[in-house]
Amino acid sequence: SEDMPRVNADHQRRQRERIIVAAEGCFVDSGFHTASMDEIVSRAGMSSSTVYSYFPGGKRELIRAVCTNRLEPVYDEVEEYANREDPPSLSQIFKEVFGRFWNTHRGSEPEDVRRSAVYSARLAINAWSEVNRDEELRQDMASRHDSFRGMIVKLVKRWQSNGQVDPRLDPDDVVTAIVGMYFGIIVDYVIMKDLSSLEAVTALERILRPRG
Image (tube, rainbow, N blue to C red; front, side, top):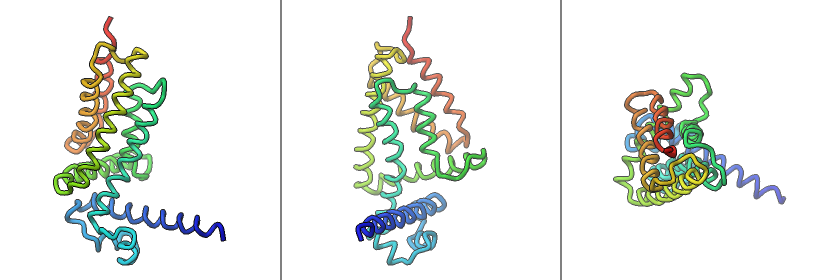
């Protein structure tokens, strides 16, 4: 029937997502290199042959899939803001983007949010260390990072035109500060285990405002 291809595609998408979620959990718990394919197969609740049919490259392919799965929603959201004529403020975008980054669908209670943030931060640190071992992953992440910076440049220019950021500032300098803060907050969370460093974003907003 006409519906059969769509049903099959939906089933394959769900199966693939189920494997990625299982792999992500194993990577967070054990690290990219300690986690084994046997652990991932067991966590996914599938046969080994089924998992390998979706990811014939095994763990290395799953590492790339997990990284992509986490990065794409963040970059897509930033791109959507960058394409607006009147985007939200820097602090609003940071709040939304970090909400997207931390979100692992683990609930909204304070302890759920804290556990979700730990989960995401561990995954980010694992991904950053992996780029030293996987050149293809490094190139992919570098390309995405360049695109990410381009989106932030676009946002900064819009903020300069609508009076939120001093137009005398070099957009590239502003972007360097924003991107550095973004990654710094993740590292700070890994060390300090709280998100109070997000308050630094409002301080940066004050620094970037036009001077009289």
